[in-house]
Length: 176
Image 1 (cartoon, rainbow, N blue to C red):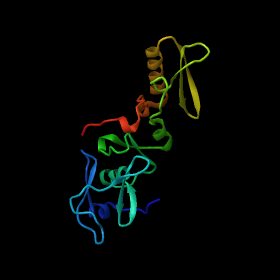
Image 2: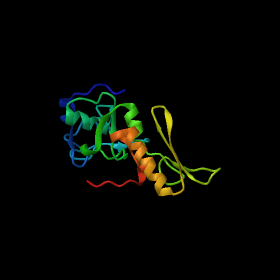
Image 3: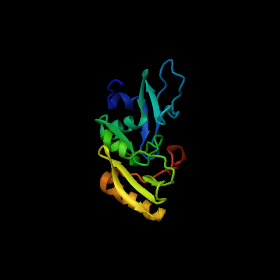
């Protein structure tokens, strides 16, 4: 876990643009290879942007929270669109670990999240995970009807953290 970083300390090194989600370096740090005005950070193996400040790595979405709210988030920062590289302020919200997991993008063999083909009947079955268990949404003849039922069930169970997207984070495109 990175050490606590004050807003004043971070702001003396980086500038954050909430409209683009990018951090830029304000001044050159001794022995660092990065230049003033350069975009800070690089993509980590898990798809998030990591920024090194004074030898400590920080996730950019957590730094964005520090800049906008004045403190680090208590638990998680959720990327609303599921893209961990999109650190625009309008795409970030504080969340519990459970809420953050509700917004995960899950691959689906049917192409629809929460919908799969029942081998025995050939019908489309709906099942949505929430609260540590699967919630049954029935079997449907039509894929579109099953998709709508899954979306409806997710909206009820997950509220504002419902994510109906089945594309991977890498396939998503966002507009600044």
